[in-house]
Length: 314
Image (cartoon, rainbow, N blue to C red; front, side):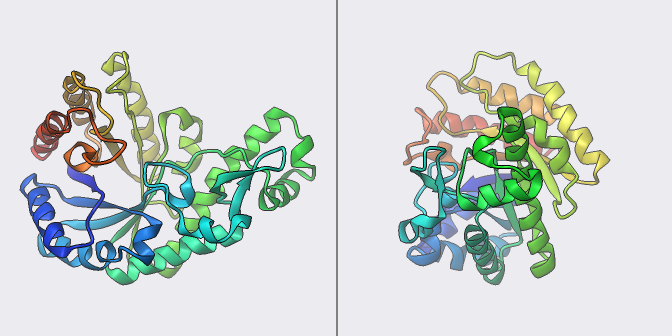
């Protein structure tokens, strides 16, 4: 079983080297660098230095665009949206929402340019993290709805709108993975679809350009029996087998409330038992120093490390 850790990174190669050596000691195979748009313009050392340092240690460097277009995650600092409000989502009443739209061709071009950059830097994979339906009425969404349904998005009933929003997620993944396979075939394409969007798993699993599919059952702070993870993991695992995809699962080590750390290990044991191709943990050192930090990051990180080490014996 491959293991990996998401890592927010550092622009200084001296600090990067120390952290990557620590990650290597855990036996991790993959590093999932959480790169923000700001890193492409200002804090560029994270992109420039990480691939070689990781490869020198025998770690495979992958990239997640953390906070891309302000759509998800704690790294919401889109440079693109600061410059061009026409790329923002539009709410039904016509007001702007502070996030971009993945149906907007200009936003897609921006993402493709970022992918070109990471390929040139020497990263070996791109991770589409948690694409989810968005409630947007921008001109691009309205045009696409008209093409698909020959009607007006503003006047559509909720059932048709819901169908459209789901189609848009799948279309976005198709567009990005097809671009990667055409322009940068050396990159592995990975995607995580959240459990709340499990109705999309089957369609996403069938996307030809996607290599690796998984989900993130982040229940550490929830009072849910961890055994209820098993059918979810089995379902997505079977979809991956049916569609010749690799299968990964995420382990929560971020935002963990103090006293809940034992559930990291309990969830990790369930994941290991199901034997996915890869087990990834978010995030390095319990995501200390961010607004998504665990309340006791040292204890949360220790629990995640225990699971990561155990997974290497599988």
